[in-house]
Image (spheres, rainbow, N blue to C red):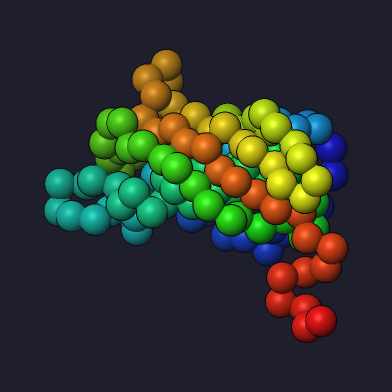
Length: 129
């Protein structure tokens, strides 16, 4: 399926799409030293959130999709060298609103989960009315 949103995103920092279908996406992130928050190699949660957000955007896959809110939980730490996969599914659609459930796993171990509330706008969020 053609990717219609977030085409210029830095995939080294937000992950590489490995599957994009109607209402569904998978994004793989290979963590690096650039993402470390400390000398022990803890990955800053913002990178995991960014990956999950990117997966949610791809599950909706509309050029004008934006994130309105998110309710997330960081379940396990991620360290430099880990590869994590975000799986996003659109679970509800009402008008412009889309609810997307995202789970991020390292192997079979869930490290992050969340609900992303996305909106499909009539035009790009930066276009003036």
